[in-house]
Image (tube, rainbow, N blue to C red):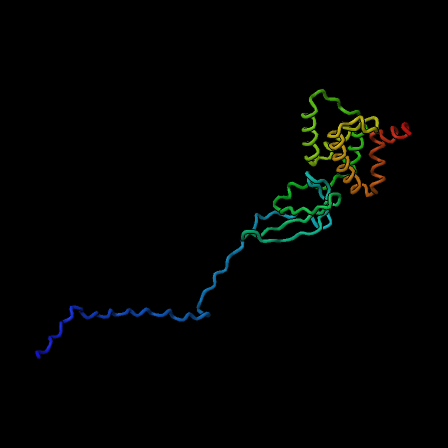
Length: 214
């Protein structure tokens, strides 16, 4: 029988592609490697005006005591700041030294005596709407100026001590101004809260009114 002829395959042999050799990274000697050091920016320099244990007034909160002067880094910026304890509100404030212009030193004895004189004067009676007057009183309270505080206390003081003579908002503003003024009197005069209250009430004529009501 005749032998069967083998069919030739049409498949062409696949040429193997040459594989490129990837060079390995050279070993870096740590001694030769330069380390980049980020410089911390400092806040604008300003001379520190207050020291630890100094009493200061922060307009929106009243009298506070500086309990420490600290440093912190916020966003690559070095910041120096005061920590101020507002004892009456049990609150601790953080005030950057470059914003210390918002603070003021506590008043002198002469300024306290002038406040007592203001408290003794007659209250100014304004005919404007209460909402407008209330706004003015709030601005004076938050100004941090002791004479303006004394004016608010004097203007909102009632000759009678009965609560019915004052609206709720009037009483709130009066108490806020009275408390802030009292706290500064205490620190400057170095007397107790009770003695300070007696001194202020006597100037306002409140002691006399209480005795008359009893």
